[in-house]
Amino acid sequence: MLKNMRRERITITIRSDVMNKIDTIIDGEKVRNRSNAIETIVLKHHILNKAVILAGGQGVKLGSKTIAKVLVPLGKTTLLEKNLETLKRFGVSEVIISAREWVSEIKKVVGNGEKLGVAISFYEEGKSGTAGMFVHVKKQFKETFLMMNGDILLDKIDIEDMYNYHKKQGGLATLSVAVVNNPVGLGAVTMKGPKITGFSEKPSTKDRVLPLVSGGVYFLEPGVFALAKKANISMERDIFPTLSQQGELYGYQLDQDWVHLHDEKAYQKYLSNK
Image (cartoon, rainbow, N blue to C red; front, side):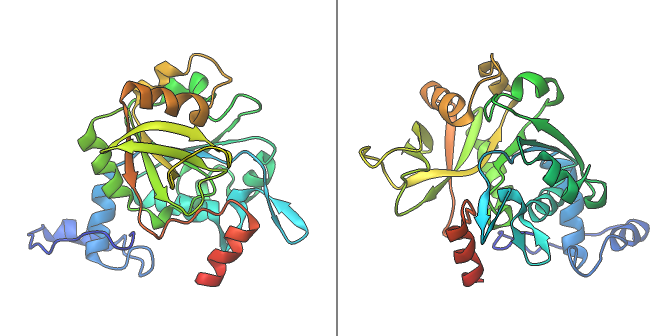
């Protein structure tokens, strides 16, 4: 499970035959004990079912080779596989990966998700923008879902706490918010209380912006699909600014462990700090 989650000690009584079934999912690694096993079972039924990973855009240059950002190696696995494992622990069983030129390379690594225990489908976004897929897949989403930029390391974010925060606020969307030294080139946000009142995608050095930026992970309600009336539409340039104007976009502030592996410098910095 994710690190630093708040936990409470409780005493419960469970039928012995049910306890035997709980014990069968303990593998000593991902599910280490009965507490982890019970958490895994509960989260699968009450947190998430579907997620969208944005894996398009420019690749990252590692040495002499350029690869998809979602495929940067993290030990014996890749960033994408690690994020899929995290999503699975929170009950996600269906993932749509939205990509462009990297589709074939990504498929070679994760396929249809069978080996990872999730069903993976692909949307080749082309020039439709990061929200263009909504026009085509909206009928598949009937409840709250998670959407994320593929270059974020998901297990550094308290997904359960963010989900609960999103539900408590009651808006159409909750965007993770990170604090950085230099917001230039990132999605800069302004906030008033819990609400995001402004969103500027990749501001220039001439813009006066606060050090608050999009953390690249967001919870959305199906109601956001009403804003996607055309295929060529962007989360950053269209959906988020509109939601902020409507008072329907909330911010969830992340801690200092936020990891954004968007280029070789960030990747090497992450490796050196491990």
